[in-house]
Length: 199
Image 1 (cartoon, one colour):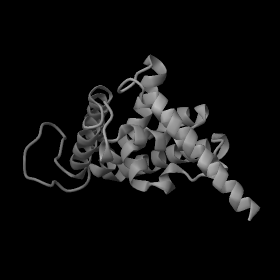
Image 2: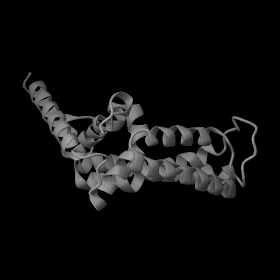
Image 3: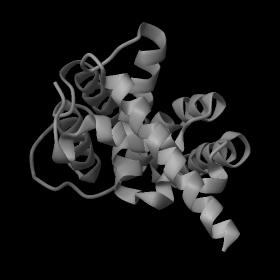
C-alpha cells in the first residue's frame, strides 16, 4: 500500500531513480553507499555518550547510536519487509563499526575512515560523471536534495538490489509507478535543458 508525505516511498525512490539511471552507476552505488555509512559510524564511535547507561562490550549510546536509531526507525516506517532488513543492517553496521573503532582507536580509525570515504565518494562521483547519461540535464542527487541523498541512499541501494535479485516490490505496481515518475522527471529536465541552450 502506497504511503504519502515523508513516507511516500514511491516518490523518494523516483527521485533516486531519476539521478541513478545507468546500470553501471547503480552498481557503483550498491558497492559504496553502505561502506560510507559504516565508516561514518566508525568515526561517530568517538563522540561522547548521550546518556549514562551501560551497554555490552564496546557499545556506547553516543551520536552513532542516535544516528542508527533515526535511520533504522525511519526505514521501518517505509516498508515492512525491505525496510526492516535495512534497519537491521544499520544496527549491524553500528555494532560492528563500534567494535572496529574500539580496536583501532581514534589515532588510526580516523585515517582509515578518511581513506575509505575518499575512495567511496570518488567512485560515486565517477559513476555519475562517466556513466550517468542524464548528467547533462540534472544535478547529482547529493546536490539536488542533501537530506534525501544522505538519509535515503542506503535504503535505495538495498531496495534496488532486492528488486534486481528477487523482483521485490514493496507493493504491487510500485516499480511501474516509479518508472513512470522517473521518465516524466527526465523528460522535464531534458526539455528544460534544451530551452536553456536555445535561449
